[in-house]
Image (cartoon, rainbow over the protein chains, first blue to last red):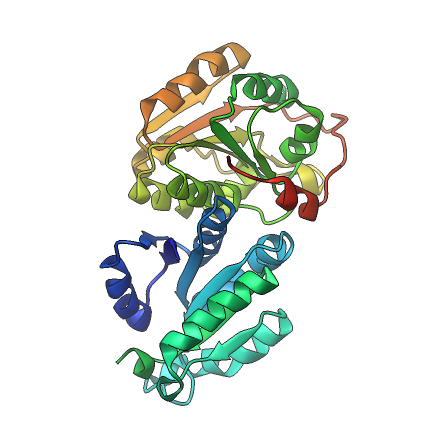
Length: 149
Length: 185
């Protein structure tokens, strides 16, 4: 990747700290998630590779830009999305988001995978990027805080 | 107040092969295929508010190119937060032109919420370093090269006449055609 556009939460913020240390990836702080998607797409259209790092609450903001930009123009766009409210999340108020994350992605016809530490997160990231490039569209890797530990 | 087409024609004449043009949906995108533009063009037909962040991503990826974004006031009113993102990123090669006509022209000419938004003041307050108002074609010919030369994030606010009977051509290029043709040398 050449650029990672992000709106942080606790987990994504942890990940972005690592991204900021990279000499290859430009870390870009966006004010809102739809912008992050368009910024990543712009980097891709200009010859780089853009990623979007956001929480699932922010993902829910992105239905319009996913359909009207990423899918309509067939732009590869890789997402890492913190899966708040899944079964492993200890914070109770995230639960409603957890319940609708996978159904939302399915309804939007956005392919996704759920990362797991036992399954080699690094390899899942590589395969997710490849899936976005090959399909010329979005691919979402859902991560838990445990995967970042 | 100046109508859109002469401003857009003048802008096309000011662009060079070292520029990249990203257009918002609507009239600008619909006119552009009928103009001679010497720069790569990526035109949106949906996704209001995406032009400036899309251009920002391009500008960061290609610092050797000057990226120009066209955005409408209706679109930016949905996401003025993007100005903060641009101000923070501080690209030296991004100029956004905001076409202010107070209407959602593409969706039937409905009026925007009737708040007296001062875009120049807002952009300055949020940290955009080079902000200027464009009143007509003559001022565009002065202000646009000045923005490009400033090497700072720039927003130019164009006051544009709204004409509900303007014969805007329909979209004439499909997204896959636009995407396939778009290359920044």
